Length: 241
Picture 1 (cartoon, rainbow, N blue to C red):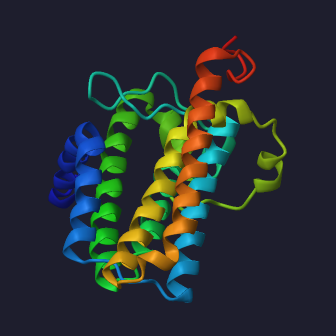
Picture 2: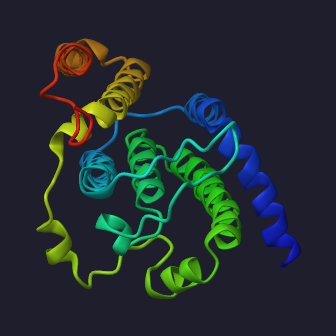
């Protein structure tokens, strides 16, 4: 193991434990240090496209073959090696989706420095976590994991067999149950970044109503999903009844 990889793995273990606190703080610091400007059409289109692509990858992954990434007692942990669904094409589709969504949000700032600085941090952060997980999985699953690594890329999906994968049963109830919080967060962050950019440009009045409408609809959808998850059986994922 090289010194660089060892350092990245140590950082990966730390970030795995603290990412729910560190990542929002870093994103907020980047936006404050490199304030957003009203994004022109190319920036707006690129940001929304990357955000939608990242969220779409997460939705596909959860609906086809979900894997829990929370670890155990703050440490990397896996009870089994998941290789089906989107994991048959990328070993880390959830992290890929997260990174693309974050790049999309940073692009919505319209500030290339924010995109470069934030993008570099999150790219290295997710790579570090991935390397730490790879060492753990290799130690736990051995040759089975080596064979999986040999045929499936770390991040960028391989297209072979994609149509067959997309033809598998899709559990949309699992998506709504497990992903409504992330969808809500991404929509609200996008609206907040655009509102902040408009405010700094002195143009918030013109954009306040559509942004407020987006925030209201996102909040209503989130609330409905929460209520349905807690009080109804039909929204529970397959096998959870």
